[in-house]
Structure formats: C-alpha cells, structure tokens
Length: 150
Length: 407
Image (cartoon, rainbow over all chains, first blue to last red; front, side, top):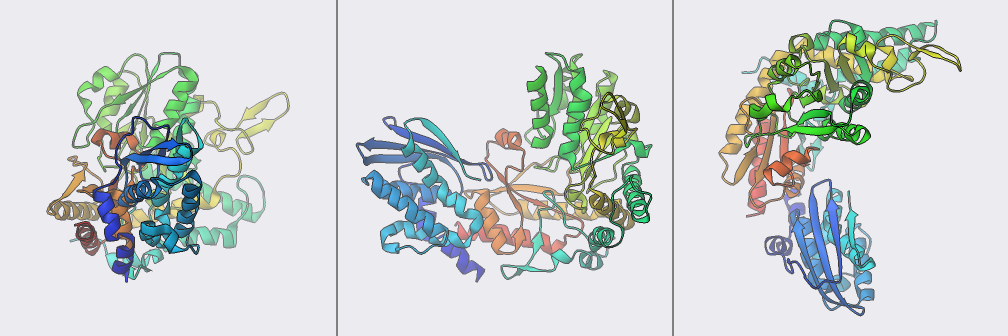
C-alpha cells in the first residue's frame, strides 16, 4: 500500500521534470520576478516572467529544491507560457484546489494533474505550491519580491 | 552486547508501540525531541491528579506538596549536572531561554561598543541569534570559531580569537546537526586563562553523557528537558553562584521578589530571582522523573548502547554507494547526518515516513553548518537508548528504498 502511495507522489512525469527541469534558466529581459523560499526545507527559487500586455510571453525559474518543488516549478513554466494573466490566475486556483483535495476538473489541469498525489502528503503541499505562490507574487509587482511558505 | 534490557525499556515508552503507514514506528528523530517514558508521563499526570497547587505560596497541604516536588526536582537537576548548590539551578523553558537570559542579564551590562562575543560555526540557531540580538543592542561584534571538513571545531586560531575584548565564549557541547562532541573542557581552560567566562549549550549532550559542571568548570551550562525524555517547555540554566548573585533579574513578576512597594522592590534570593511568575511546575516534576529514569538505567550504559548503534549505522550507511555521511568527527554523539546522491533530503524524509521511519530532514536550525558544506539540508537519523539494531537496519532499508525509487 505504501509503495503505491509513493508512486502516486513520485510519478514518472515528476521524476523526469526533477531530473531535467524545463525553462530552468535566468531570464535577462524578464519584467517581473520574485524569490520564493521554504525555510522548513531550504527550498529557494526565483521565478522570472516576461509579460507582453497581459500575455505571458515567457516564464522561467532557477533555484534548488526537492523533487516535488522542482518538478512543480518546471511543469508550471510549461503550462503558463502563452497564457493570459486571467488564464494563469484561473489555473493557479485550480492547482491550489487540486493540492488541497478539493474537486477540480482534471481536464483544465492537463499535465499538472500529475501533482494530484501531493494531496495525500500534507507535509509536501508547500513544496508543490512554492513556485505557484512565487509566480503569483511576481505577477503582482514589478519589484523584486520575496514570498515564504513554511 | 548491550547492558540494557531493551525489550523492557521499550515497554516504558508507550508511543513507540504503534504503526505508521502500515509499518512499526521507527523513531530516529531524537535529536529534535525524545520520547517520554511512562514514569515521566505518570509523574506529570499524578501531580495534576493529586498535588496541583501553586508553589512557594500557601500554607495549605497541596501547596506544600507542590513546592516539595518542585524543589525536589531542582535538587535532582543539581545532582544530574553535579552543581554545588540548588541555588545554581534556574528553571527556564529550555536551552533557548537560558541562553537569552545569560545574554541579557550577564553579558549585556558589561558590553561596550567593539567588545566581542565568541561562538562557533557549529552552533544551533539558539546559540547564534540571542548573541546577534545582543550585538545589535550594544554594538558588540560576533566572532566565530571555524570548523573543519569533518565537522570538528578548528581550534588552530582559537587562542587568537580569545582577545581582551571577548566578553563571553558560548559554545555547544555536542553539535545537533552533525553530532560532533566538542572538546569544551580544553576550550574552557584556555578561555579562563584570559578571564573569559564560558557558556556551554548542553542541549544535545545531556541525553547522551554524564555532565559534571564542576569538572568542566564552565560558568553557565544550559539544556532542555524535552531532548532528555522530559516534557517540553522545561529546561535548566546552571550558573556559578557568584555570577548569578551579581546578575540583575531578567524578568520581573511574582515569586522573584522579597518585598514590593511602589518606591522600591527588593529581589528574592537565588534561584528565585530568575523565576518570575508561576513556573512550569508539572514540567519540572517530569524533568526530575526523567533524571531518575536515566540514572536508574545508568547514563554510561545508555551512552554505550547509543555508541554501538552509531558505529553500526555509520558502517552500514558507509557501505551503500551514493550516500555521503555529513559530519565524521572522531568523537560523536549518536547523530548520523547524510545525503543521498541526487535526492533532496525532503524527498528522503517523505519516503522514510512511508516506511514508518521518522527522521529529520532540513537545516536542523544550523544553517551556517549547511552553508559550510554547500548544501541546503541533510537527512538526519539520531538515536536514543531505546533504539535497536533492527531499527538501524530499517534506516539502511529506507535509504535503499529511496535509491530504488529515484533510480
């Protein structure tokens, strides 16, 4: 039973994104960025966003963290590219609901549905949401912001 | 072979008899907080059932009993660290509060701008931050004894770090992150040769070894109860009587006074001068019971068994490819910090938990140690005397499971 649960958390897609995170780079022409930290485990990342009007032209991240936080950040950058701010905000809410065990339409989540296993591991929800909180903080301001989840 | 009857000992710890995620609980997070034997739990419960009242107050029977139990616990703590007098034992919330007390009451009044406080690179945040606050308040400087790659203190520059401006040396007896046992006695001799007082943070030492403050000749020794099988929220500060006597009270309130008028308050004598307000009576009684429990088993017997667990665990973990032990000092308490190649410690912790094995993952409130090694965190297994060789094997299996999953 326990092994099956672990496989739900550490799905192949998550392991793959942890090993080879997508959009893992500094973005020199970003017009929004924020720092995210989880002092509990030492996860620290930066999310870079290039907004063109209200469309996310590019999004990337850098930093270090556990498999869940790195994979979640990587998946997030893939999901957000080309989305409008309103779409990104809606997705942010869906992701949040998924991880806290609320009902969500998995079709709207696409690949992000692989993170659903996190809800069975309450201690790890913050790992999976760190990049999303950081992205949210980046969108909210032109300034260099820090967010903390603990 | 262990001199301890582990089967009988484990029956004293009811919490150990449970399943986590379908596996028997293997509790290897003792450096964070230890479990409590039934003797401690009963002592606390019986106090509330039979003797609860405020101390040092009433003439009624319950207050007398509560006072006797409270002061009885103080005498047990005195014996436990071999202090000369009960007046030298101050009850506090824990090691953290004790360090803050010494920083504010003993060190602060002496400090001038440019004076120095000497700590080490191995310290827990509890023995860093109170001194940083003090430096901000006074303009004093924080100096740090460096560490070596194996996780020992590098004492090659120690003599130079002890200057005419050093107002206190505050150093851990045992590192919580790595388990290193520091040669504090040698450091105390050198500091005293320059008239520098010394505080020893013994939070990680008292669960594992006999501590003798007279032999060490430290000026202050601090520890927490919850890491040595006693309740949370209780700890003790040992201080040499002549130093404590000169120090101003840290907090004001009831119980720390002899007389109060609006013109003048006369402070109580030691140790009550430092115990404002109704204390954690139940906690002290639990602490006394924990000391009884450890002494009945024999602290050197506990230390011997824990050492055997550490040696076995170190050997077995070293034999696994792709695992690096962080902290390989010659003298260690039963703490094993490690990294599994390619896997973040937080993931390690979750996978262990799924197998019922509780370990700590993170920076262990010792971020400078993590920065030294260039890592954000480690996984840490820490043993108590109730742990078994089978539980060492569970640790090894846990590591293999992580490697299998992350292969």
